[in-house]
Length: 194
Image (cartoon, rainbow, N blue to C red; front, side, top):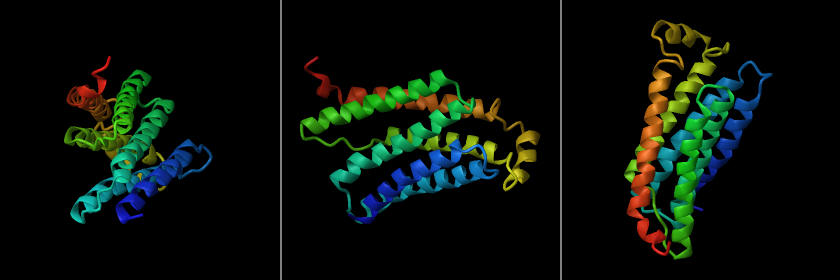
């Protein structure tokens, strides 16, 4: 298994670590640990694609698993932030619906022997989603002792979930839906027998 694919697998593992820490209530530093795990996982998302293209290490495994690992990480982030009442559930359902639709298209393509790689609009969608989740994780971590020094910044600049957070949530939703419809339209031939 080449290095980019190892990074993709590492992102899958880090997704579970992230979920574990963000789900813990008893540790005074669990949100900070969740933030760190998420940021490292997000960095692997950038690195695996970059290294695969730079060193010509693009594989069918990477084309399939890289977007899947992204979806697992991002879906986990949005679902847990909904559980913490930071993001409305209906927005997360819309985001998850897009992710399942794209995964379904990839499965249809795979059945025909075609591997659909990620598109640029999908990559931008992933970036804004990562920024959104990191923002809310920073907000949560700022309430803990390790990163408590950040709390005055959130208060002073109205950077709470009701201000900048709302902008990021809507940007994530709009770009997610837009990229989903674009992906569906470009691959509509897969649905030709409907």
